[in-house]
Image (cartoon, rainbow, N blue to C red):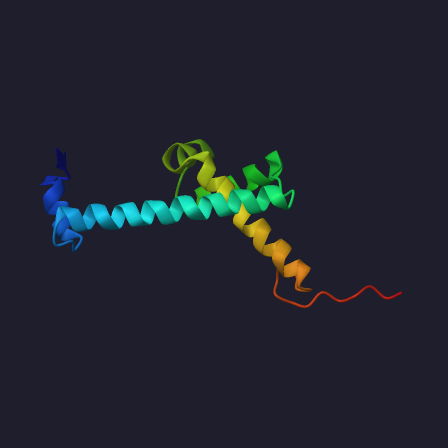
Amino acid sequence: INYYGKTLSELVSAFGYATMDDFFSETLLNARKDVREEMIIYQTARANDITISDEEYNAKATELATQNGYETVKEFEETVGADYIKIEIYKEKIINKALEANGINSNGHEIEEAAE
């Protein structure tokens, strides 16, 4: 297999890995970490009834596509997948919910109690 005129072994070496085993070991570790993080995010969202509307998805997908230099959301989705976009939205919503539960708004300011 040839990648940009190099073999996989040459690329792995160029990325600083001493051996293919080192590369595969780190790749496996990173994959496990990513799966664990996604499971926690989805479970936290489900447990807290956090959902994503079509409008929220479309807005975030458009924002991320633009930030990453894609012409369309469809191109971006084909590259990263819809789950990536959902994870980013869930992360933001979970963080905001945790902040609000501690009296802080999404801008980092204390939430003022409404005058009675």
